[in-house]
Image (tube, rainbow, N blue to C red; front, side, top):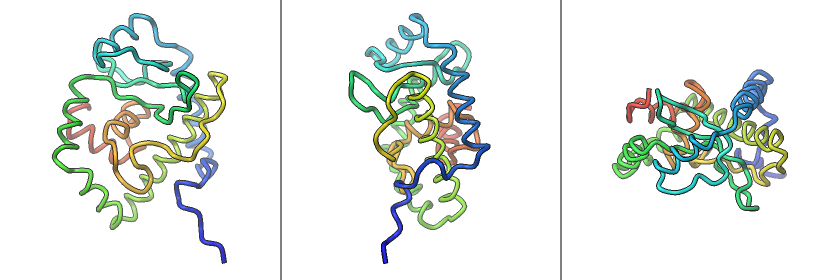
Length: 187
């Protein structure tokens, strides 16, 4: 008897049609307004480096760019991170949360809480679906792996990625990204 594949190996086609359509429509809407040179300069100033692969601004708060959408191929190499946190203050506060060790507690909650695990798995599948749509729209090959970001769907590894997903996709997609947003005052 063959064991079931790890949940991270399941295809994004396990998403509901509504969730898949949401990912497609969001990718189309965001990529229909590519990042301007001014936005790239703003992100470069915030990050301290040029934002390679930046395709569009994904989330703003007033004039601040909070997160961007990145193409799944940067300098000819596959790049798994499609949502990238760019706001300097949010990056600092999120790093402080990570340094305080909250990721271990959230990973333990994932092991015990079936509802949280289900919601986090959905966030993982939506991440994969959105990244596939970005590749399709930008004429790039799909990312060659079922790995998303932030440790999804099995553990919590990078709050920056999870927060960026929540900021770009909106609330009620990634429960841990949403909790991070509340903790760091992003919403």
